Length: 332
Image (cartoon, rainbow, N blue to C red; front, side, top):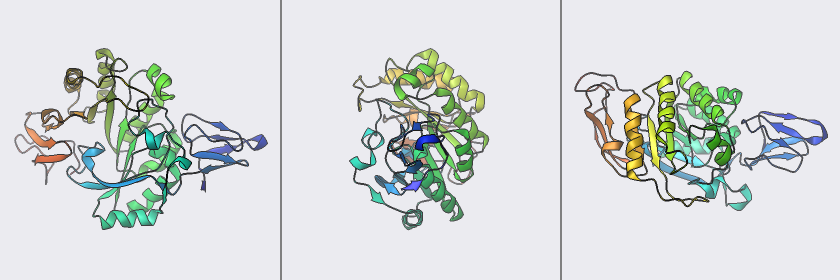
């Protein structure tokens, strides 16, 4: 355990956490909504501070990040817990359980960085569950990793307060942020959170020159309406039309047992996105065209992907389109 950051001590040994917009008011002996921040006698502790549930060397495309060092491998690590309660969560077995329910391994920042280097990884991805509720460990490790020349990547729901995010932001190179829907009703009813807070994180990350990509899981009858998708696309385009957007296919998981998203629905979302954004992709399906990076000017295929593998990459040494010279928004 480690004493948590971003909380306030109150009377009668109560505390209030200000890490995320939940602002949990926690009495002694209880935990916040994330399940991993506990009040012990008036002091808030991070229960998952140096504990990991999962670690693997993954293709960066799996995050998914298509415009950040394409084709490279990154050491990916996760712990336990989440500040959302999404009933469709694909990783519920680690995100929606308490630390006591899993066999977790201890690791310190230096060991994790050493592992990344030994595997020739260009960085560390904090992923699998929600990295923001692993805040103390991620902040500590990302500082050291950056000093050691490694990139830090967050795969996140974006649900964090502005002040802690801005403290962490200087050490983060890239983020894939889940924009789960574009209605407050969806967030309140299914995620138990607030849309505006996620939008603010996306805005701040882009403003701080962090490489941002966005993923939206298209769930039948919940967030697959054309008007909602158009509003989501318009909002992203209003920030930067070069932000890559990944529409991902839903499959039954956890407490949701709807039919998988149809390919036609995904193609419609893809078409809507391509009208306003330069880079749109479909995920959780194996389709070469909708996972290919095209030049937004001359429409030539520049990076052709087959799942998480790259079949052709014409942007290995330059981010300029070899056919028309257009600058492609990509970090190689």
